[in-house]
Amino acid sequence: MSLIQGLAAHAAGAELLPFRYDPGTLGLHEVEIGISHCGICHSDIHLISNDWGISQYPFIPGHEIIGTVTATGSEVTSLKVGQRVGLGWQSNSCGQCDWCTQGKENLCPASEATCVHRHGGYADRVRANARFVIPIPNALPSEQAAPLLCGGITVYNPLRTHGINPSSRVGVVGIGGLGHIAIQFARIFGAEVTAFSTSAAKEEEARKLGAHHFVNTRETKAMRETAGTLDFILSTINADQEWGSYIQALRPTGTLCFVGVPPSPVAIHAFPLISGLRSVTGNPTGSPHRLREMLDVAARHGVKAWTEAFPMAQANEAIDKVKKNKVHYRAVLVR
Image 1: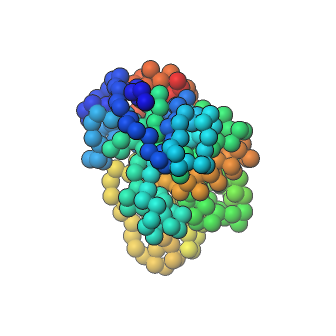
Image 2 (image 1 turned 30 degrees about the vertical axis):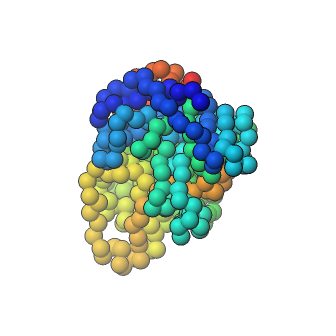
Image 3 (image 1 turned 90 degrees about the vertical axis):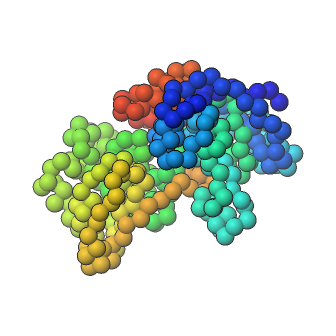
């Protein structure tokens, strides 16, 4: 096999530079993907900067990958050369633990991330265990589908896990890379959707995406009026908030779920949780089964990420725009 060519970070916070590596012999259960598109996720930026203390350099970022199968291991029967496929955050799991055998591979203690301690999708090719390589429905354009493989499943999985349905009243905090997809899925599930944002200018887009209501979180009166109105609140933001206000917005038995990571510890009084049987939780990415389901739902109901495309060679410029929140709403690298 020829060398794989990509763009790698060689030190924490460094710009990406051309990099080649030898992928070795293709594993029996592996698939090699010729990459056409790769989304830029905020997780990539955290990994480049080693914000989580788990990065090893040099490494090629990227885990929202769309491409075509270029080679399959001898034990792979589920995928064929030339097939359009996607690869998200996870590239392998042990396949044997309690979580894997329950179809919850995303909770596997031995889970392997696509671009943690290995090379990801800002490249011409990538490899992964075939179980985590997902066929892409024909109705989904590659550019709009790429962000669904991490951003999309990150919001879809908690909505499904918590049983969101037409009787549900759902709040989405933040109308950005995750939130704009969450609003679409929550509306498709039939929920009554309330969008929360610090920017009043986001109201028109929130309603266009499917939100029934909009709350400017800078307005104290508007926040107070949400008290006791929502069954489920999904926080997609990486910013500190007055979380007690969102707990107050929950109906009895309601849940506040984090998929964005605020920089400070989340401080919440216990009494509202106790008195109303309310809960606070978080949610990781989803299993391969849930990814397939999500892509099928997106294809049938027209869910698409709002994207801005950049040539792969301009990855550094694209990353800079993402850092400055100048991308509306997801950046996708195109080869």
